Image (cartoon, rainbow, N blue to C red; front, side):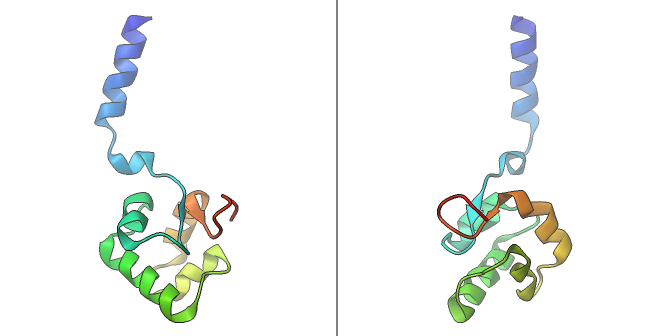
Length: 91
């Protein structure tokens, strides 16, 4: 049993932090949080998301992220489970 726990701990330590990405509200989060929580979204793209949101208002659908330059449908689909639009945890 101890060997299994040790193996699990070693495996978790070897995973990149992005493997533990969690839900993020793209209508409220800052660029740093968005880039830390979504796969394939660096700080530059995260800043573009925030700028778009500030200029055009909140995103109404997850797919609306594709309106941001540099964000494609593949990136949206890859992160769909972790993208939130409202503070209540619902998409």
